Amino acid sequence: MHAYADLVEKNKRYLWNPFTQMKDYFDRRPVVIARGEGRRLIDIDGNAYWDGVSSLWLNVHGHRVPELDDAIRRQLEDIAHSTLLGQANVPAILLAERLAQIAPTGLTKVFFSDSGAEAVEIALKMAYQFWQNTGKCSKSKFVTMCDGYHGDTIGAVSVGDIPMFHARYAPLLFQSYKIPFPNRYRNPYTSSDPAFGALHAVEELFQREADQIAALIVEPVQGAGGIVPAPKGFLTGLRALCDTYDVLLIVDEVATGFGRTGRMWACEHDGVSPDILTVGKGLTGGYLPVAATLATERIYTAFYGEYEEFKALYHGHSYTGNQLGCACALANLELIERNRIIDHVAQSARVVSTRLNALRDHPHVGDIRQAGLMIGIELVEDRETKRPFPLTTRAGWRVCWQARELGMLLRPLGDVVVFMPPLASTVDEIQEMTSILCDAVERGL
Ligand code: PLP
Image 1: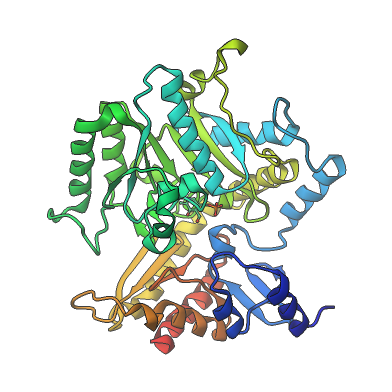
Image 2 (image 1 turned 45 degrees about the vertical axis):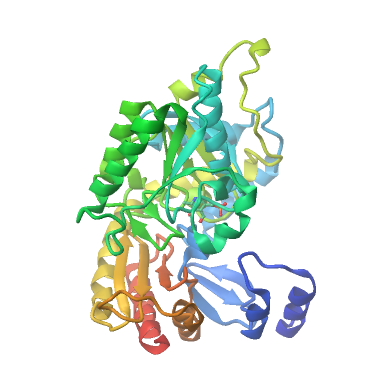
């Protein structure tokens, strides 16, 4: 048994945490997780916390799920890993088949990787090379959304637009066209219908530049941009414009896929199928790092030719198609279906929405946004003018620190408090977590 102080000392000496201001982290008594139990995380001293952001938006059923633990153990008896480069393995083939069966229409080919950012890198290279392989070499640029987030690798950052995370790396990035996202609360357009404004801006750009544009990439709900759902019809409009101007549509469902928004895929709410879909996070139920980029036959065919044509997609990682991860993902998808998780999310989302009514008149709650069990509460200094708090107020963190005191771990996005409980949380658990959330907002501000 390790003592807390000893572990924190070793953390200080050796471990560099991601997206973490290290001094501030150590100043605030870090939480050191020892184990998980259902929807809770238990620290080294035995304190239990609700996993209020699903261990960074990915946990589906909870922790220590017998079916997932067993699937990994069974796979371990055969093999842990062999490469997918130039050869295959059983769980990777079966998982590709299963993903193609449940994917939006037309996405029949599955290219595996290990993280959401990699799935995005692959989508970008796939789209770029699709046009190279089909002889339209000028189509090499990307259109992306302001405040978009697609991961932290250089390609993914190039199509991202969150100033705090991305601006300092600008000299390392390739340029992409940026379209303001149709955010209802902070409408960047003169039109009162932000989706109309955004579609109009995309169309103007396509009219001028479509012969230079490989693809448009979009999140159906902007995640790291502050949990901002696209207005209904926006993806439908983008699909139509991409068809008209022969631009590929990449939908990034790394955060929204596998039931998070109350449908298997968020793009289903609009009845839209992209040309390329990126998935990750919930794919293994929050257990192991597996992600995937799904593509249509049209795209795959452009990479299919005689050896001497060298049409292959030159991309692959050491652990791509890892058997333990794929076996776990298969068990996760089976459990999502057997336990009717998607219906359950729709029901739980209604419970959250009702409970959050308690916050709707709070003087510092500017907006409450929700897509299924993806919830963002935007805190503002002034409700009337929507003026944000000064950065140093750390309003989002103040609420999250209170939540931790009350027994739930949260992580804000600036002044947006994010609440994303594991999808299988029971209604009672959801009620308890939402009560803590409301109390934390009251106490933190
Ligand atoms: N795309 C979206 C929409 C995301 O929300 C994220 C992560 O939050 C990523 C990509 C990157 O995924 P990963 O952290 O697994 O690289």
